[in-house]
Image (cartoon, rainbow, N blue to C red):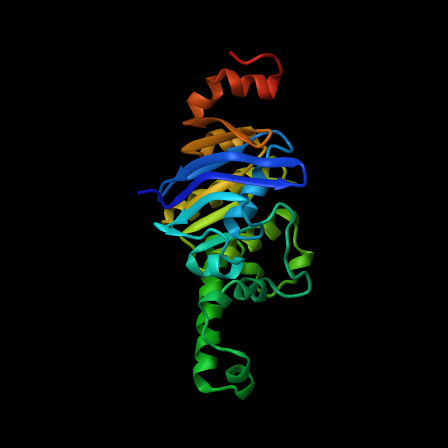
Length: 254
């Protein structure tokens, strides 16, 4: 059974149909990419899965249960986490503090217990900090825990964002254009980080414009154009698909 099932989802904005009857599955343990030209509906689909937008119709199932129309925090608690094309870190907080924020869906302490400084809240905070430090080590930023997140190079900020997303212990990680703004060396490091995340047993669904990265790391690819799915399959099959070639290179499809 697929970990994520997207079935015939639709979303319009006024008279514009941004997503038109799109379906695809993501199998546990996969790295699956969603590609397509600007305006193809990729980020809209991510927002529908993560709960930032509600579908007009269709179904979205995760681990066999519907997450259709659930609010984002409920979806995060079910085990889906995401990053954003434009990095959304707390710039004046440290790297470790940013990572710890991502743990809030798994922590028990509320406002009252934290204000009372109950002993169990100290233990929980130490545990969260230790796990945050472990994630930072895994992603190559363990020596930057005390640095202000906003002072870091772009590639390191991206790693902080990944660590924060992983702090919630997701089963599925949504990566929205993770290579955006990275140079060739940072993109190579990114590919290694994504492989490490998959090795942790986390399934990955990503949007990306860097076709070299997509073809190198993806198990399967979904291709969108004008809100519709036009192809799906292994990278080698997608590369040879006439409709995909027409979308990216111009010309008529077969």
